[in-house]
Length: 255
Image 1 (cartoon, rainbow, N blue to C red):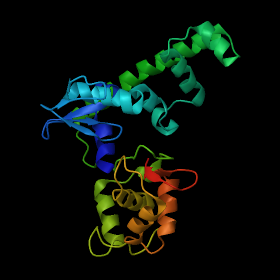
Image 2 (image 1 turned 180 degrees about the horizontal axis):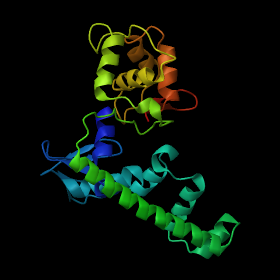
Image 3 (image 1 turned 30 degrees about the vertical axis):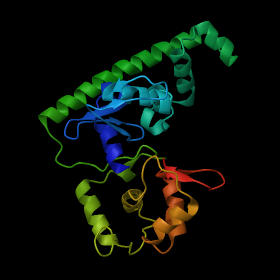
């Protein structure tokens, strides 16, 4: 899960738009949503019996399994998109080709001029984002960051200074809390130390595979080997957006 999150944040805007990246070393096209990989040079056959080379099939996979990259991105946490719910709803209408008057009818409120103003505001936001990206790329070229911060998981329910932890600090925290090396059991859980809590939960979440559904018993069995109060860890994994579950707790999965 952590590797997939890192891959997502390292991807270019173009790659995120497509929904997959190419791993030159492994010769794989990898879905940025679920991590499924398709090997270059292999021919894939979907249900309709058409033949696709790996990259084409990666694109087919994104649309078939995840509806669309637009749908996935627009539904990410507000802390990641910077968009209000109202802006998200408008963007969905824009994406589907609605005119300003059509949107007014569909929403049952506002006016065409209000919708037009929103279009203008979002276009300005796009320009600002481009300038900011260019500034950050120039900054990184000129001064490579000496300290790399930990990766923020995409299911994060909050994004603030609690994630301002470097990789070096992360390793110190893990070594301090886990016995017998990083795969050993957890000595204790820092319930009141937010930065440490996130580092530890992120490490524990690696025990779960993306795209796999787990029963509550399976989740408990994994967590029992890590910490005696496995119910506490399970609750925090859900609360902090590392795992998600059905309302009846019948299934759990990486968020």
